[in-house]
Image: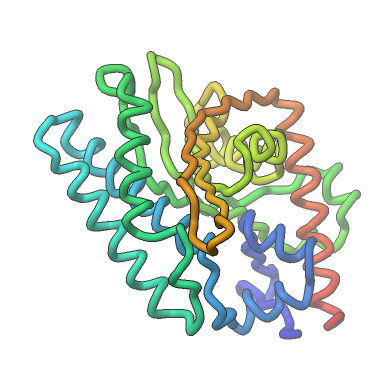
Length: 275
C-alpha cells in the first residue's frame, strides 16, 4: 500500500468521504483497489445503473429549477431526461455485462420520475432550491482532547469531502435532501438509513462546512421492484416514494465526528505500516 503524501514535508493530507469511509470499514482491500488504484468491476449492476440514472434525473430537474424557478414550460423535465440519458449511456458503456432483460430500464426510470413529480406536486410554490450537488472539502481541526485520543492524527490534515444532493427551503424550513433509490420496501430502507453515518455526515457538513443551518436531513426514497412470473416474464412494476426527515442534535453530530476521526486514525495506521 502506498505511503501517505506529505504537505510541505510536515503534514500528512488525508481526504476521506462517506463512500470510501464505508468501503474501508467493510473491506480494506477493496478500499485500496478502488481509492488508490482506481480499479472498478467490469460486471455491471442493474441496480446501480438505475440508481445513478435516477440521481441524474433529480440533479437535472432541480438544477433547472434553481436557475429558473418553477416555470411551467417543461424545460426542467427536459433537462432531467437529458441528464438521465447521458448517465445511463455512460454507465452502460463502462461495464461489459448487464442483464438487459431486467425491469430497471431507462424507460421505467423515466416513468418513475414523472410519478415522482406528481407525488410531490406540492413542492411548487413551497420549495426553494438553494443549491444542488454542492461539493465540500472541510478541514477538521483536532482539539487537544482529540489529539490525545488519536495521536497519529497530530500531523495529519484531515479533509472530510463529499457532495450534497440538494439544499432547500421547504415551507420556510431549511433541509439537506439526500435522494435514494431501492428495491427494498421503503420502511426497510428508511430504518437502515436512520441515523446512518452517511446521513449524519451530510448534516455535519451542512452545519460546519457550508454554514447551512438545516432542520436536518430529508431522505427522499424511491422504491421500484418487480417479480418474475412463472413464465419468466417480469410482472407489474411497483413504485413508491417517501421523504423521511432525520433531525440530529449537536451531540449527535459530535459523536459522528468522533467516529469519523477514529476511522481516519485507522486509515493512517494501515497506510503508514502498509497493512
